[in-house]
Image (cartoon, rainbow, N blue to C red; front, top):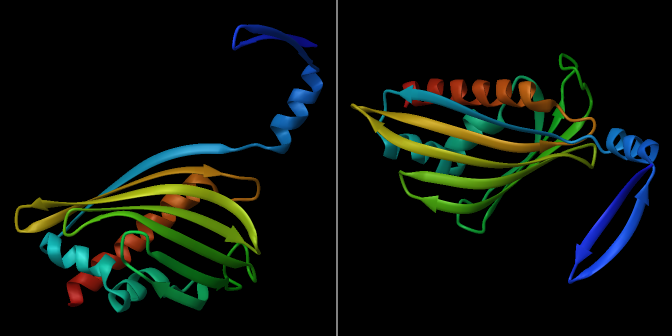
Length: 183
């Protein structure tokens, strides 16, 4: 048994919590927090790389078309306050074959050719598995562009977890590089 004395607005309140109850609560509501940053340099100007995030057809090609899932829905409203939605059904070659994943992003900040900040929720089979804040910076690097993506997330029970999410973003940014080289 753990005893807490809470002082709020000048009043002392006693509270007792069973440590076994605390362990149950923690194991039932395990949340993993993680932050990672990925930096890639592309041989294209920041404006061209930024356009690959901002223009629906360009982004759909590198972001929403995948050998891992069948795209069921994709929409992009690339404005501050706008939303991006991607729904995909995972293919048999994946660890979660048949699962339907939904990525919903809300754009909080857009500075043309400079940065994008979005919050993103991921649902699997209509159950929330993570919430994140993603910041993408576009920095001039000689004749090219350094893209710095910082991903800060809370992963809930049954989620893909930080390692898989980082691998996912690395693959997406590699797809972006392939697309930029063919434009």
